[in-house]
Amino acid sequence: MEEKPLLITMWVNKLLGPAVAQMLALFGIHHTGRDPIIPDHVVMSALIVLFIVLLLAVFRRTYTLVPGKTQQVLEMLYEYLKNLLEENIGHKGVKFLPLLVTLALFIFTSNMAGLIPGLKSPTSNLNVTVACALIVFLYYNYQGLREHGVLNYLKHFCGPVWWLAPLMFPVEIVSHLARPLSLSVRLFGNIFGEDMIVLVFFALAPLFVPLPIMALQIVTAIVQTLVFVLLTTMYLAGAVESEEHEH
Image 1 (cartoon, rainbow, N blue to C red):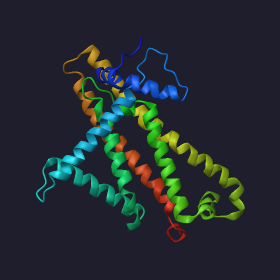
Image 2 (cartoon, rainbow, N blue to C red):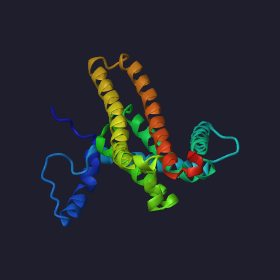
Image 3 (cartoon, rainbow, N blue to C red):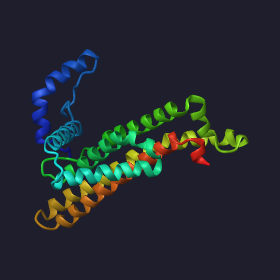
Image 4 (cartoon, rainbow, N blue to C red):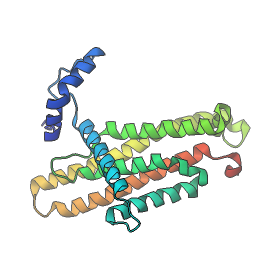
């Protein structure tokens, strides 16, 4: 049974689909399938980004010394992530705060989107979680190269003892290459599974039975966001730490 695209996806494709098709045709890509040229996960990701931008714009204009509930939540998130970076990296870790805040807001909002009727969680699509994981992978390696230089950064992969380097180097490379896979599949699997369970229970008993499952999905959304952010912090810490900090 084919899954129908969201109504908002159909509307976006009516509005922007022809322009996107023409743009892709310039690169020799021609859309011939019956599926929308702009899929659900792309539309939902754009919608989440737009929502976050509008939320932060409103927050900036309404910022007060006596915070409301929304401001309190955002300030708690900011302080938690700032402390997380300082505890694991030190004061220089604060410069990575924009990345962590962006990831936390996008992933949590995406995880929660599946609870709204007529919407889907972008993070229940592997393309979205892989994109987030690749951003983290490229970013922390770039920061490591920037902090130490190419040769010194590569020494991180050789282990503490020089004569173990031929063994440790390939093991460390494979370990690092596996990180995007681990990040993306963990997030995708949990959110996709929760969304499917909610849909099944709604189909069987649409009134009250799905409510406990939806409550569990909220917990899962929070936990998976924290796990992704925490692992990102660990990867950044390992990439930029100095030899003095290591020993």
